[in-house]
Length: 269
View 1 (cartoon, helix red, strand yellow):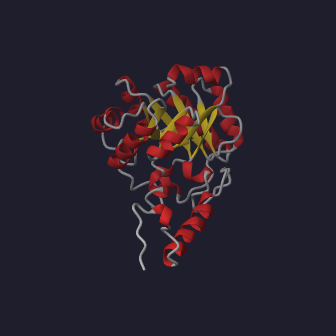
View 2 (cartoon, rainbow, N blue to C red):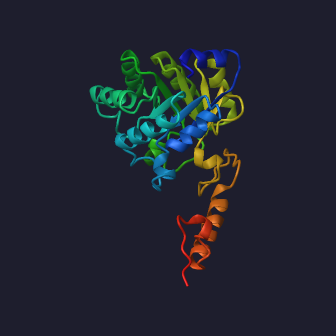
View 3 (cartoon, rainbow, N blue to C red):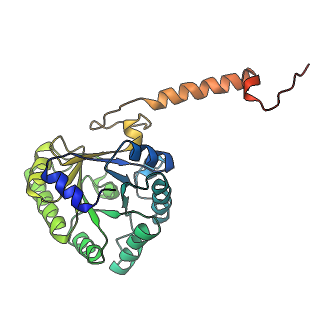
């Protein structure tokens, strides 16, 4: 399993870091056997697993459950678990208790928190002081959907980019070991990556970050929506649907099961 020092060294040596979301045993197993550096158990499960329109409804219990089963399939991979909406917004004592649950009960190696305002910085400091590794997240922060109004590119003007860079530096100073940048112009993502000493992982942030993270369902063609920044490596949704239809047709046509699929078959006249 890689550790924090390994990720710093990868940035220093300009070795790209691969991160992939996973939500269950088999996705964790495949990610680990594909030598993915980091698995993210993201609150994106609210949309791709639960069918919700945003990540807001995902609970801490949901993240704990999915992190635990991912760990069963990926026992040697560094796992970051998202802290879902409202799990770090109330007070620091509740936040630490929730984060400890993700580390102890869910067996994650680190947690991820969205945002970079002064309140978030205090949260990061508090968790790091409690020996909990924290990954920051700036740009498009899906838990802020009610503020943004829609999922769209962030930090498009110079003022917003200055704020983004300032918050990224504050997150690093607070002790975060890594930063995710989502849906921002390539230019500001490049600047942030160059200014920070901690690794910067992009998702829709261009080519020059220290690594990339993608959603499991997106790269496999299992999502209903494909953002511009996604590369669909295979279209499994159509392949699966075609074969499920074949199964249905064979059951209806009494072509399945066949004799070779039966234990101790009999000849019925």
